[in-house]
Amino acid sequence: MRIDAISIFAQYFQALDLSLLGKAQAAGIIDFKAHDLRDYTHDKHKTVDDTPYGGGAGMLMKPEPWGEAFDAILGEDVSNDADGRPVIIFTSPAGEVFKQATAHELAQRKHIVFACGRYEGIDQRVVEYAASKGEVRLISIGDYVLNGGEVAAIAMIEAIARLVPGVIGNAESLVEESHSDGLLEYPSYTKPAIWRELEVPAVLLSGNHAAIAKWRHEQQVERTRQVRPDLLNE
Ligand code: JF8
Image 1 (cartoon, rainbow, N blue to C red):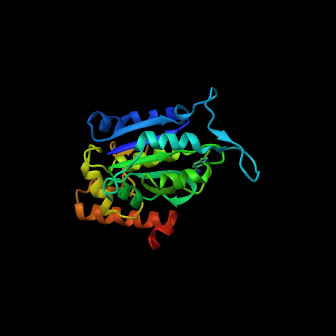
Image 2 (tube, rainbow, N blue to C red; image 1 turned 120 degrees about the vertical axis):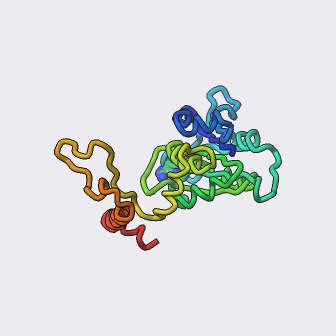
Image 3 (cartoon, rainbow, N blue to C red; image 1 turned 60 degrees about the vertical axis):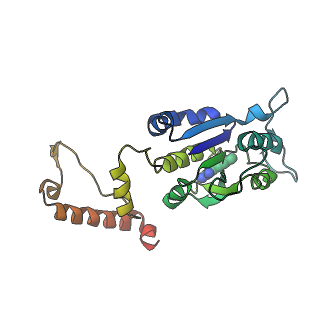
């Protein structure tokens, strides 16, 4: 799988060289590259922003550097077969909310490009232009306000990459996740059995695997009911 990210803060993506994705890159499973949008400017000041038509607060990202970045990264022409067509994700608080199901869908793709805005966002024509190069999606990581799309893209890349076969060391973790679909995790304990007078629930020390599975499922349902009742109706 190929993943590109376009941003004026390409250094953010160095976080992905750690752990998981770093190993997947070394193993050749994922080919990730962060691109500095300013490399696609031509003026002395590497300008990427300008004032909005119609007025309003703040600055917008101007279209020209984005157009050049997409041309360079995606080529002047793109394959039209559904499988190889890149998906271009604009991180946006106005997008559909990213879910585990979104991560599973995107983990099937061959090429994903993240367009990470800053300021008050990107000139809308950039979204239209990107649609001539691939499948465009506007995606948000949740209902809160960030200063730009980089942190959102990093979260999505980590969620997607760990679903790509060979990336996660522990294939069992993914199987277990798929069984506990839509519920919060049960509480977990390790040694010692008593720590600062706090005991591990006795059932976990019983060796009774059926009882343990039942207890864990009950914990999941109860936690979900208390903290995230919305998940029980999805
Ligand atoms: C941004 C560009 C976002 N969940 C989210 N909150 N805020 C953002 C976001 C994304 C892009 C830009 N400001 C300027 C905020 C996502 N995804």
